[in-house]
Image (cartoon, rainbow, N blue to C red; front, top):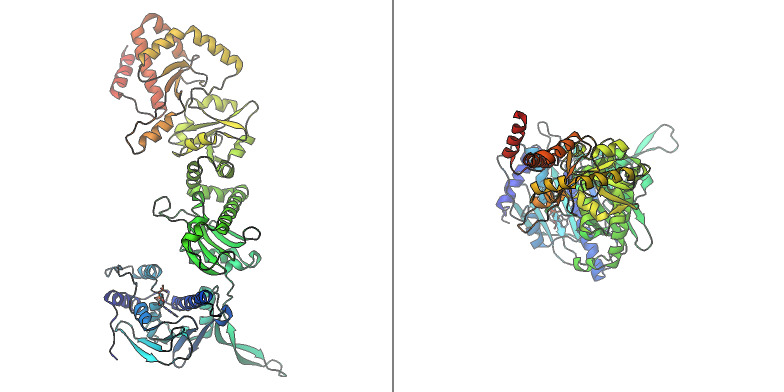
Length: 629
Ligand code: ADP
């Protein structure tokens, strides 16, 4: 029988895998066992659909080795393959054909791991330890069996063969030890046992192997003999079906890293079993770091969906709301039917109930973390807080009650993150609003003139530095009955009734002066007023409208040419500052100079707010004039 050649790309990949020193040679066993398990899933699935009467108990994987003959066999009684399938599945590596392997890559080890992970070329990893591989297989329901044989890059042959039962037997002819390479270890019982435990413990079918046990010889004290028996090597029960008490953090972390391709432990795991309106097991993880593509369109949210232990969907997006899109993990429910289609799933009532329940439990766990392990929560917040804020915003506030307690903002008090609840409990006697300021950085906000008076009173200010922050706060309107108030808004005032009365009188007395300044700033500034927010600083800039100065900046930076809403700027002047007496003097004596002063003060207020001044040269010249005269 003529030998068939592997497809060209397959050949290169195979060469690379076989010939390089691969640090994880041992994964070949995991790959073969996973394939066997998949083949049995397929048969079980077929049986469910066609009522073939095959139960899980009928299915198993047999592992065997022969040290002398240097062979390992992995057998399953799964679906098997017909001739075409053998040809298509084992003749071409990385079916897509789009695979381009970088031949000149020097960092081979790393590349290989990636190749295997990405392209699912699991079967070929057998050639890392075997000089020859045979696949004897018979498809369920067919009469003919086939034998596929290959010694690696040369190609492969397929011949008719004899096999009584359906399924596949893979025989590996293990390489001889060479140089630094130890292949003998794979012909050891303990090694194979430990590999199964390590990589394939949750395979749901029993992986059986004949093992040796030492046992005392009856009647002969102190003497032992070897006894051989068939042992099931894997614990089979998937990790999520075990009880929490049985599992260590280490086991959860290991599982997460292996299944979800992360290099670091997760920040948190949530393992829940729920019965009632929705019955399911869920094992969820919150990664420590946001994946590199998390805040891009490429990122796909979703949880693995299992129906009674059989995976039916790799990424079920309907199980996670957008604000929790960072959660990884799986849900296993008996309430879902195995052969449910994607379209049907979307309308599945059970799935909706599960999603609702998961959402609550994720939130509760996050809240718990916030209360009990603040450092971890803050780490979480730094990575994923923005997602929660976007979620809150895009739900038009409908999720207010649900999500507001997860929010954190930096407070002026110690420049530390605080929750709204904590802020409210620290509010001072007489303080009736939650104060906030929005801007580019904590440092800039902290030096705003308006903060001084509030800080003196012991009031805290929330510093909002993400673009979306102020929009959220405005959507929330209030928290715990306390209104949010921007210190950059013209209607915020921090004075006592007494002080306000005084201010009103003073404004009345100086209304012509203020009107004169307003005239000088016509077209740039909506109004000039005496401020009720300032202590030692001369001026500040606020907004009269619902659009704040910061929102104007954020909206202005967004793409689109349509008319962007603008803030109605108000120049606020400190009536108790010496500059005010000077303005009064100029009003009486030199109106031109008053106009120049109005210009300068307005520009200063812009600079303080982090806004551009229209004409920096004119501004500097005016200052210079003052310096000379
Ligand atoms: P992957 O498992 O990622 O698809 P592999 O290279 O490991 O890639 O396997 C290629 C294909 O060969 C599988 O998808 C499957 O169709 C078939 N196959 C491999 N092992 C078996 C087996 N034991 N029984 C039936 N089919 C198998």
